[in-house]
Length: 172
Image 1 (cartoon, rainbow, N blue to C red):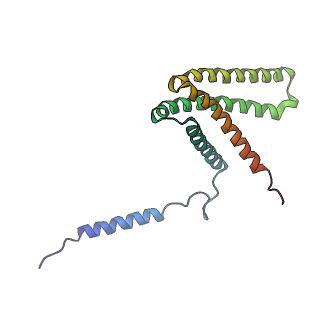
Image 2 (image 1 turned 30 degrees about the vertical axis):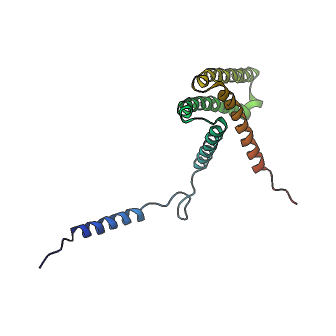
């Protein structure tokens, strides 16, 4: 009588049981029926990521980049965008602090605040000038011009979307 080799069947069953136990033992995702809601930061991060994805799609469409142009452009643009975000984040911190304490601030502190605002605007302009030459190095000038226009269009698009969300539906 021939004896059958059952080792492959046993291994398959063993793997099945291990995998099923691992998946059952996983904790529920945040915000699930048994889990706590996800933190507020999580929602803000998701919103930012969604906006970034929309922006990439918007700019890609408006600029009509070739594969070669996109390969050169996006690393430069992402670097520019990161530096701009860093600069604006610092400004937001300063402005928030000033907004909360403006009435109690001395004239000297307010003067410093105004000077800081002017310095911010200059740094932002310097960054734009620096990256203007970098954009011209990786894109034709016509597409650089389209980039600036598309950037402004995207800002208006976001502002309109925000305005539409805040307005209550009209009663007709």
